[in-house]
Length: 279
Image (tube, rainbow, N blue to C red; front, side, top):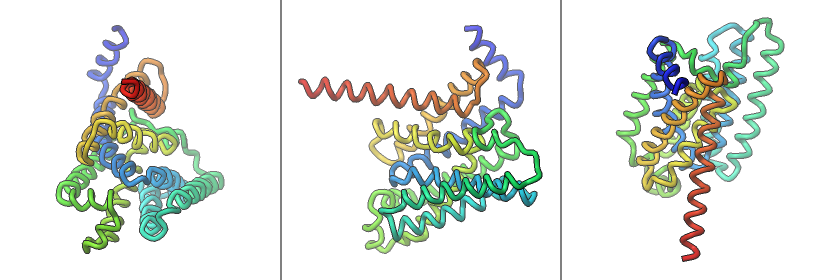
């Protein structure tokens, strides 16, 4: 009880934890929607490819001395367009291309950081830093959430159809190329913003685990996004609490909580299905 009381007292007394809680709310929306799109389209590896290629943009930005957020965003969007092209033309090989870009992006980042004269702490980019989220980041997350939700509300039917029957959408005359480019752009920006909490190493787990668990409870894409957002809030809040109590990185704690929950839920599901099979 003392740990819980200390945690809530710290939240009340420290403004940086206020930012962390607001970031949890905003990122949970991104995680729920973007994660569900990745899972439903079976392109989870795309998220990892985008995140690791963003590291290349970070390295280039550090070397040339401009905004790291700008560098990572540009590289992520370029890779998103490349993977959207692959998705449309070589869908069966998208995991292969994602893995190649994943390794290539990381190698570029490492090379440029190694030859850079700047002394920069890369740990926050690798593992995230929830408690250091600033006001500017919160504003960017808020704007992105609003745009993402508006796009989802207006074009939900098209997004749903493209996610589950891409070829049928083409036959119906839907501009699938445009929608796929927009969806992949949202994925890229969502991954970049989520990296501030989990870092590029853990961002894939934070986006995919809540959406994957939601498959058990959700019957539609919309409900999957809602459930995934709720799971994200719980995982991130519990992860923040564990990080506070045990002095560990929040991104790692969040991923640990989510993974443990995934194991428990699917173990229970397997057990229930086994019992039903005997009956």
